[in-house]
Image 1 (cartoon, rainbow, N blue to C red):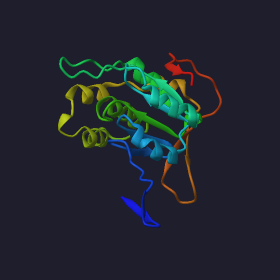
Image 2 (cartoon, one colour):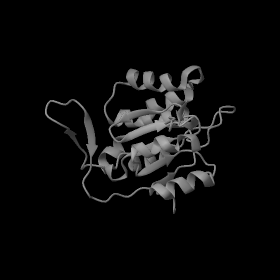
Image 3 (tube, rainbow, N blue to C red):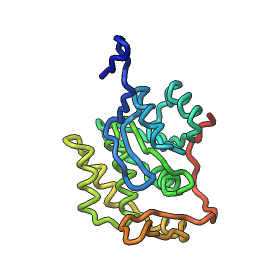
Image 4 (tube, rainbow, N blue to C red):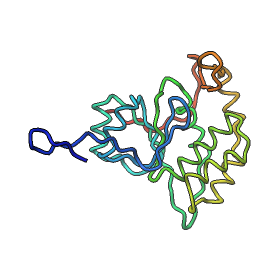
Length: 203
């Protein structure tokens, strides 16, 4: 799209969302891998951090964008191969969850390559922590995965044990935001807790 100004064409600033972009809940977003065309849109989210679920190095152009916007990158290198299928590492998902639900990292964007399988597993485990019924967790996963839904991912989500995370984060509370609002957001105190750290990129 373009505007004609004084007989000349001038491009509109068009905000382009990454593939599979969606809000998970207040302060948490998900998507496929964002490219330069998406940087303008990402600015509008005022992100503090990105949870990146692929083992490949983050592109230099993306790193420069994060540095300019003061966004911290947490990388968890989960393989995404489907043939032969690679098991999702439970300890890595647990560590990513602890970063994800700490509101000091919000607003946060979760992404892998296409925003389907690895991202879907992490969001699915978050939903279990939020006490979603399993059928709703699966429906959300399949909505983003589409025809490429993986039974191994659904089995991983179903068997993922969040008890240790609940015990570790005993300070979690739900707070209703605004009078009469049904939106719930996870809030945490400043108590420290131990977990295996992701690779954090210094920008």
